[in-house]
Each structure stands twice: as structure tokens, then as C-alpha cells.
Length: 154
Image (cartoon, rainbow, N blue to C red; front, side):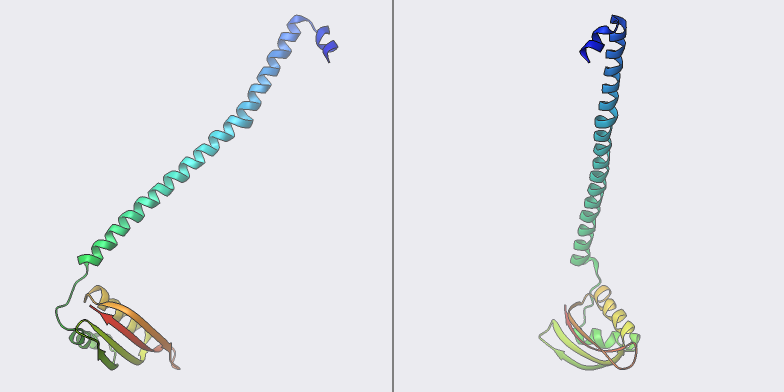
């Protein structure tokens, strides 16, 4: 190889050296630097997306906190009067009601439409300011009907 190199004219040696440097530069530029910048761009995009998601989550958490504190409507009547006043609207019949102190109660339902029960529970939480502590729901033989035990709290 050295013998071949020495047999070249000085001008050809400079041309070969220049071409070699150009190829080396091209390999470095397109084989190393460009992929690094491409990876850096994708990481920056992922970071920006994660930052945007984090900001959205923080604002959603603040909104939820504010709704829990005072965003929902609160009825002034007792749990019993609220329940009795809202059941007819949803065409539900309660089997049993058991108060537990002033701010808690348990309710039992048998063979009630599942969808209407869910809508009623949603109404209690969003419009009446009650909180559902626990729910136990069992299927009935009739399709779409359930038996349920619900624990409410103010």
C-alpha cells in the first residue's frame, strides 16, 4: 500500500487525501451527527408532549379539587328527604332505608332498572351534594334489572 502511495504523483496524493477527508466527513456527518440530532429532536418532542400532559393533569387536578370543595350543589334537607324527593323522578322504589346518624344512610333496592339507578346515583352526587360511599349491585333474572345496596354520606 505504501509503495502504491509513493508511486502516485504529489498532485494525485493530495487529491486522494482530499477525497478521503471528504468521505470521512460525509460518514461522520451522515452516519453519526445526523442520527444524533434526529434522536435529540425526537426526545425534545417527547419531552414537550410529556410537559403538555403534565400541565393538563395539574389543571384537571385543580379543577377536580375546586369542584369537590364547593363546585357541586348541596341540598339542605336530610338524606331521607332528598332520597324520597328524587326517587319518583327516576321511577325507582326503595325497599329499605336505614339511617346511620345524621349524615349517613343505607338504602336497599330490589329489581330496579340498572340504568335508572346509575342516573339517580349520579344525580345525588352532582346535583344534591351527597357522596356515595359504597355500592353493592347484584344481577336479577330480568335483563337490565338489579338489586343494590347503597351507602350514602353527606
